[in-house]
Length: 497
Image (cartoon, rainbow, N blue to C red):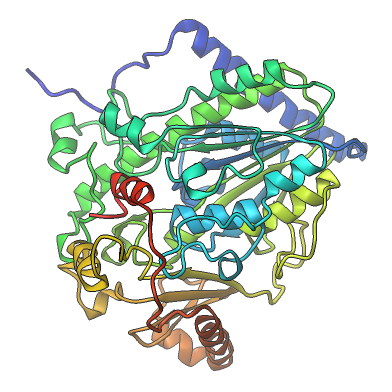
């Protein structure tokens, strides 16, 4: 039997589904044209005065450069591109960490990692005393619902706080299915909308998990070379985890291209779900709706001999897409640097909800792109120690299976801090000398960059060392115990071997 060619074939969608998606795309394009005409004519509508309903979507593991609207990919995200055409596209949005739990904790609390603690010293559960975005919106009269395909974004890790309704595909669900098990988001959101009070605003949060490794081998995937076969992909372990293929195990350039093509196919699948949800809300005529689509972190595909999103605070895992559509606000490209926790501050402001001062979060209002604001991100190398079932040394040895082929030049061991003060980023390492990157010249040698900009190197180095000291990074700290339930979930999703 000849192997199936992944770059060819027809979609299994029905004619009705294809027509619905085509009509939705045409509608979004029409909205974009109308919005631009209104702006040119100087008659863009004023923002509504009533509290808006809010849709907040995280496309898990989505690199900014995988989104077509950012100009480096083609055809991956038509729904998100349509949203960007009528909204604000942020080009310098950053995650506070390269993995799910700390990033979602910052997104849904408005707090820095240093203040909510998730991702530090082994902590994986959002503390109950943290008042979340959903809790504050519910206190302001909002109806709240969450639909999560990521088992980490669940009540077991504290993320159900403030939600009246929380649907999640658990690790047990996915293990039983033997694959990534997704939510029928459109159907579940539609059912929830049927039962809600139409007189009250709502807050809907969605996590779409498709782009997270392991990547799916699809019968049709236009992002793979036409000669690539299912056998080619399966030889790479596609459909299974590949996150251990780092450093000396890194796949060849051709194999990395296959993995990246599979990933882009998953990005497109998540974007199709987003399009269905947007069409669902458009069809219901919810005029006063704020829509925010972003990610929690990116993904490596061979850069610095890495795959997946561990052991790194590099641009590939920290830079994320961010698209915001608000009624009455003109489409724009925003170059002002922002971070995930800024989203919560702005959503609360726009909702007229209680919004106390939050440790430096500044919101999403566009400002001077050269503003000297420092954005901090971290990788804590102690997060997976499990003293409940084994001593710290044994746990570390287990995790180091992934790094067996790594050496000092790979810089993958120990705690890390990234301080971004555009156009520079300093990488601080517990076990290696610091590096300075010029984000305008990503291929420049860090040592030469530090010599060219000694003041930036010194200032950001001081900021990174101060941050590391205050958060306990780079020092031995007692790990926070992990419950049996959370341990199994982390293991099922590949964060534990």
